[in-house]
Image (cartoon, rainbow, N blue to C red; front, top):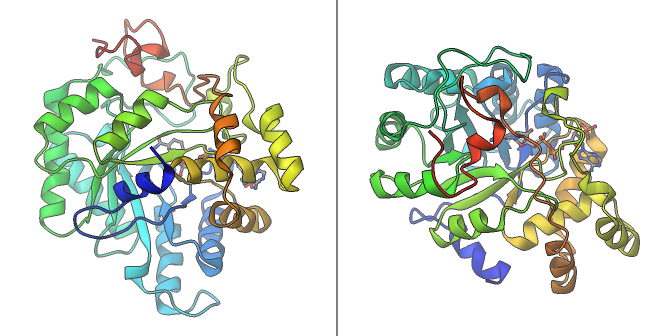
Length: 338
Ligand SMILES: NC(=O)c1ccc[n+]([C@@H]2O[C@H](COP(=O)([O-])OP(=O)(O)OC[C@H]3O[C@@H](n4cnc5c(N)ncnc54)[C@H](OP(=O)(O)O)[C@@H]3O)[C@@H](O)[C@H]2O)c1
């Protein structure tokens, strides 16, 4: 399918369009909340309209204060209307039980200082809590594998929030095809988007195609290969997208940074990248990269061949006791691991 055809999937029945590039806001345990909020202020000032937030990032209050300044015209540039912004937030794993989920949704809404969200995602399909900065080998005694009935109870809360007009779209994140099949069969409101790890060395072709075929918008996280990810998410086998010879070659021929090539690949392929940065120069060049001078079809094909199936955000901390390894989270054999 051509990228231009994929764009049709980005137009939900309501007619609302999700901006084709967003700013990530996960400070990876190392960038302060206020610094991330200031990045949001700068980003909207130069043209970003899509901000990817989450309760677990711990910075929604700081971002909320900045959003208020943006919509009231005190951010240092003319006001940007709420209706022109796309704000996503996510439900954290320890808040899946329905009573908690509604409270968590409303807390994000209140921390962000908003009357409604544009998109609310179930951050991970597991109700498993882990303390911040915990060791990757730790296993919570309460952690469980995916339990579809419980997930749908959580999903029903999101559906209710949507029906009440408190969120315009609801979606999933870190899902697999077997899990999505069950959700698509049972959901009253189908997921609008699935946020998933997507970068040149981790293209997830099968899941990407499945998502698009089912009219779900693919939002790609860690689009640059997450060089600043927490140490717990690093392993010796991990590869580096921005060092790939094909990426470097295209970057050199175009006279641009390898990061720009990764973002152009994402947009041309038809996913929505949400790069994180707190550096003005990078925030600006990422927006420019995603917006102008698209890759050629030949460049798209060349990057299509460098997939290394290298998952960076493996999710070890969400494993349950008795799980064999992080692969159990991702249903690699096509069935849900129990
Ligand atoms: N749904 C999920 O489970 C999930 C999981 C992970 C991430 N996410 C979302 O996705 C967002 C992005 O993912 P990510 O933060 O893991 O990784 P990323 O966007 O691939 O990489 C961010 C890193 O790249 C650097 N960077 C940004 N622009 C650059 C440029 N032009 N040149 C060189 N370096 C550049 C940043 O540092 P500087 O600040 O120095 O520029 C930062 O260290 C997150 O912030 C979060 O919102 C969602």
